[in-house]
Length: 317
Image (tube, rainbow, N blue to C red; front, side):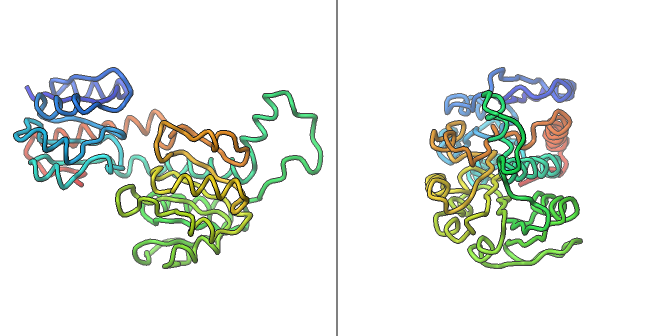
């Protein structure tokens, strides 16, 4: 029977579906795989379902010259933790779970936009600490999103879902940058230059894939181009934003605030960010809804089934 490895516990329904077809081993801890564990995955299993943090680098693949593993069915749309070219060279296919995460991630972006613009986290901390003295006209004045301009960096599935929520739900104007203009079913202005986009918007939302091409895409120059009342929201990958530059921009008032679901060196979050009241922080909750995680898991299982049935991978990368 085909041996399959889950690098994290997935929802019970997903495990049940996998066990019905495969000889399944589930690692019951939630930390990323160690190098030794990845070596064992490649040598002892026919396929694996890794996820964020499982760093299948070129060095890891090189350490196993003749891997038994033939498929990494990644749990998640982002796969920058897997060196896909090195996997291919080792004869290992890679798949992911696009589509299943789109709406949940877009919802998280909207949550962070509201939290940072309307100072919701700051207000909750004030109340829980017993510091709220009652309503008054100038209490915790934030920025109203209606009628403002949102800038989307990366107009893929998730970027478009965020833009639609902003336009149709909040009456915001939408501007965006991407590799090329998109044919969209809602009004949006294409701005080819990132710093020009940053300078023109009230909220800048990062929705690009992770990887070497987008590493530190949002740096001191981009942050410096933003308006002093503007907010940055990142639901992409932590290292898309140069964290030290963001901290400096927030501390010096270059921008008004930020909403973050991801971090450059997560799970480490800089004390400087934690200490700032003008930052809304979430622990990578982008897809944290049971239905979404079940859908993601079933996409991984379907990729496994297709591969071992000799069919084309539904979600090859």
